Length: 302
Image 1 (cartoon, rainbow, N blue to C red):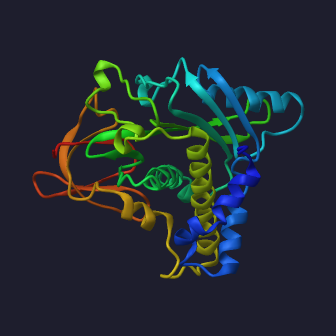
Image 2 (cartoon, one colour):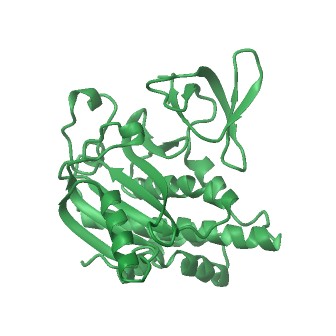
């Protein structure tokens, strides 16, 4: 099998994806798929890179020098990363055996829908893992985990091109597939798909499933924006956050919140809900509610 935009489109239209499309008429399904079609429009695979997101930056600059733009949906993958990092430059272990990729998306959504991009990516990652029989969950915003052990992480950045100032969303995704050895500081907090299933998996097959889920999730977000602009979003249309809520286990959890929660935890609370803007609504010890739209949480519950 060759990973390509055509194979991605073929999978997302296949019977194995019918459960995700079932709430929509055929015409709306086609509209969602057209919106998501750029995913994988260009694919670049490497044995080793420092960071996939850095390679995307280079490609954006190279396109500018050629008086063109980088195709939205461009994906860069690598078998291993030597300079991988997460939020706040935290160490991310990215040896051979995992799926390490980044995707570039043109900044074309309205701000209120841009805020939902991280939820979209989390949904796609979680659904891809669940296709392997692992009942993974999402921790706000998009950490994929099973009982506190992290399977996948997402890092999002928005940048401007150096010459014309065009805006791009760069989204890095790391998923532990067959890598089963983790550094000491990650041994209790990370887990791989192989460890959870007892099997070795073909990384290219997983990448195909993930990119197909990204196609549908991003297409759904664009369709949601279109319907909202027409003020015709109806209750039988499943918005991105509805899907996210069905996959998340954050509501009801005792948490510590902070912008950088590992280094500067700010307060403890109980998660009440996630509102329609993606904001995390928490109840403080004194009973007051507070809503946060950025930052991160750590679960205190076992």
